Image (cartoon, rainbow, N blue to C red; front, side, top):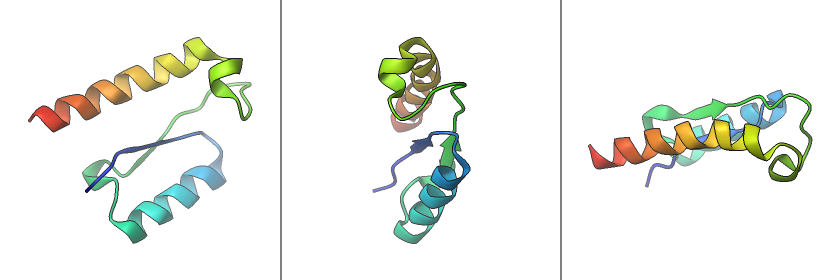
Length: 69
């Protein structure tokens, strides 16, 4: 089943997830989308919850809308 993927902005993360999606068939037409959260390390939810929500909410809304179509 295709699954959309939202990656952190680290280039190695986006590259790794893109290769995994391509190999496993996940992601569907969206593939891997990347988001940059300035000044955030490994704990985005703790370090920048508002910025994380600002990135996640539109992504989730697009996924939900695509699944309804």
